[in-house]
Length: 294
Image 1 (cartoon, rainbow, N blue to C red):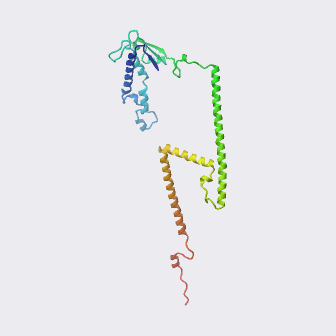
Image 2: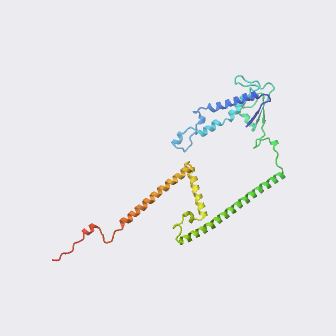
Image 3: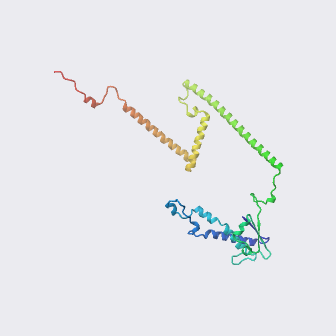
């Protein structure tokens, strides 16, 4: 990373230099030859004939090589800033004047060596320096470190917040357990009352499954159904309405299959049962006739 600073009053020169750097960058991106050896790979030993036939790099690797323009970018900067003092009509660069100086601050000062060293490469109007920065991209001298007292106070506050969050979670768990226990008690009373009515001949003959199951079992079943629904939506990319429609279709198919099985079993039971005293007609005809007494 580099920071180029132009002298005050030379904004037009900075804009023209920035425009030339953008043009050079775009030219580097579009001037690659697809048949260049840079985009080909060497087959590795042990590869099959099909793998060896793929001599070109993948699109991702080609993009990485095209975007790896660090050396070219530094060389472009040197080519533009070399003529920045008096400008250049050939490339449309506006100069900063005889007394102007451009300062280039590098995060790594060794990066400037990609273009070369000396005034004949960078020109006499360029000064190189190191760019001080931290992870927040701020000046290190302007960032004030926390004292020992401030750090202890900060840690105490963080511990108090963490403890308050844990206490809140514990209370929520206790409240949920209390609510579930109350639901279980109401469910047990309701089941006992319905069984009493059934013993008296009142109410439904068979209790629905949702009533026979406890609230905890119903909650677990609903949660499993919701998970299956979300998994189906993620796998197929469908909506909740489409999932409900597919479930209705599946239930209808299951109902038809169940009805067909019941009819087949009923038909088989009817064919197997025969009235007493009736036998097969062919068996009756093949019986040996009684002996005639002369």
